[in-house]
Image (cartoon, rainbow, N blue to C red; front, side):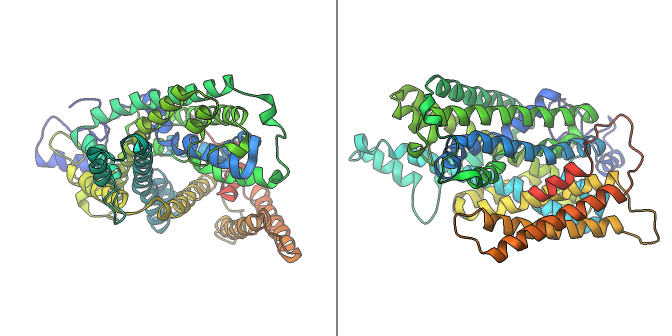
Length: 500
């Protein structure tokens, strides 16, 4: 048995049925992932459409040159949940992420909800990124139409890539390739992940560096355009938040980390620092290179470099984007079989997903089933139908994780009223959800009525009041020794819940 397989379980030398069954029951996965491997998974799953699409979109439509401020605010908000994942990843070092945390703190019902949300994140996000990548490849090939429009081979290629009926051939191919990599052995998947994560960081650094070289001071004024205002910056931060989603996959494979108590928190913190730095540098560069009114909403950097006359940089950027985005598909779908494995152990999904082969590897049948579902969604379902549903599931998973930290670290007041903390948390979530809806309405470009503003203030004050009760009246439990602990509990996880 090698030490480089993501899904390898520790199997005794005696391969009799008893030991094999014991191995499955104990859910012992081989711990072989280093800190560098974990950071590569986190960066690979996070840096994707955020830097290639969202920066240009937010700058052009919401924040103008202040797009970097939007990304910084979103990064700080992501840290609230990220530090909660860091603690729980070290406290519960087994595969499953939010599913495991919810099961340990809130019971099976919440765990099933968490598992469903993670499935949306892993399989749904992988499908969405694959579909987005397929659309980008198609758009890139269509740029050849002026030169090859009457060419028979070009027409044949376009028919294969875009046969109609909503079918995306390129999305099918990249999804199939990712699944085949996983089936061929995760040793190869791990090497590919590490290589392309490093390439991804280098590409974004190159884009940021070149755009900063071409920066013009006049493009940064006014820093916050009057037509957007502070509300536009906040709306931009809301959109930017989804560019940070993916770091939590580190926790889903924490059961295979060499030293999860130390490496999981470090990997999450390093990932958030790297991603935030890249996003902020790239957003400053793009906004300073091109007037925000002229930034493309779908192809900000390539079109920006063409606008400044650097076509060779534009080509490198466009091709680089097409090269590294498949990494997000691979890394994202990689977590789904591990989640299925843990859920199958609890009987939530069929036991088929908990099987391991003679060498201790996760059974390929489970990978095939998850892969087939992803391929089908990516091939036939347009990206527009996936985005909001996936985002909602991810935010629910974040909220469950933030809540789990509070339940682990705090207890109900020493009164004869049981479950006071749990009831307070339910009320906090209800009013946070209501406040989010009202704040979104207030920050919209449409005129907001006085009644809505009053309700928004009342709802937000209620959230602060309930949060203060939790902070002042719910005592802390005895803290574990040797674990990374989320700072400022319960304030930080409550902020994470409110943001989500």
